[in-house]
Image (cartoon, rainbow, N blue to C red; front, side, top):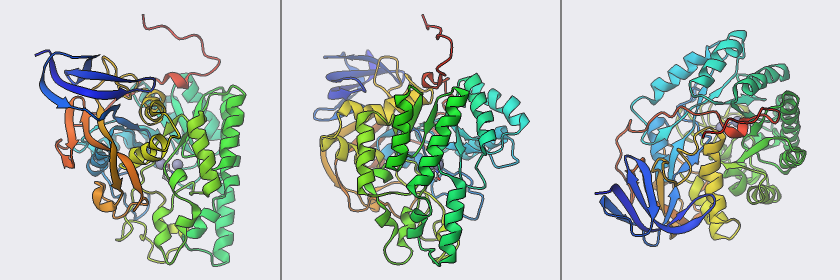
Length: 478
Ligand code: DUC
Ligand code: ZN
Ligand code: ZN
């Protein structure tokens, strides 16, 4: 037998091409693409199916310590299981440094949390909250060299945020070492001032979470992040962009030739501020930051996705249960919005939602879908070409996708450990029927076939898009 596995008769899509081909897999890697490949020990008939690179979700939170009594609902088992059922084969959650903690200790703790659990491959981003001399001078450079080549900086949240001077210091290390910096861009003081004002007026229901984080707070921080990155001459990636004003800043920067990349997420296409409203506390289910905006802003986000402003589309899966003492109600049923954990689930619905509304409704080409959801996240975080594409030599991470299957999303259908989905009742066309990781079937037709712990940790390379404008020419690999 020439191959361990041959996937026959499917339509393969990459970020550049859509073509009919068999895929031959050997040793967990794509070994051949072509017509009428020789026999494999196993064969899958993919007639009428799309053969897509497994999704790379570049922004998820699994079992991340929260700093209060709340707990994330998904650990590395339920989170990766949910990802796999949604056609995703690689996830990048965050090893978050608590203030006062060593960054290396945060990474070691996060590895312990993952141990024995993931069913698909995973890498870590870092979150730098305490850039001490030791962290900047030793830990961060050493961790980057060990394969933790991307990290997130927060401009808001007291427990996480850096001031501008600290941001400059961290950006400078990223430039020197070639790492990618992800920025959470919201102005902390604007939010704190508005939150206090709203509370004094008794406006504490979930709806007011959105009011406390207006687009101007996102716009200001986005502009500041861009300016700090320009000063240091280092690329940055602005995560979870929600509003038209931030998009305008990003386009302005890109138009000036700066290497400013951007991510958006399903919640900014499919939810609005109205979803935080309604009776009682239900709106807490959609509390996330930045908050969902309105239909006009959704249109701008769509245009940014199809038109090239955004490079990546991630879930920002931040799972908290609605009921129970550790989730959205951690501070009580009627808690003010400032006490409600931020974040919504979405790792399993990311690809079906974008495929249905994007590809099936004619907004974007299939190649663009693959680029945004698999190839570009792999490139941005130093995992390409091993991940994010179907090419000879790449890991055989594949989603077999039925483009004609219509599914109504309900929480019963999903495999996360959250007790709701914000996308309940949305009908989508196109659904992953099987997901393979390194040639192994992880799930098929609703059944999980992989054992916990089979997923491998991926040290990341230095991402090519993180190269500063002023960097010397790269050394070619041949
Ligand atoms: N930022 C994230 O990236 N995820 C969840 C909440 C937040 O503020
Ligand atoms: Zn964030
Ligand atoms: Zn996040």
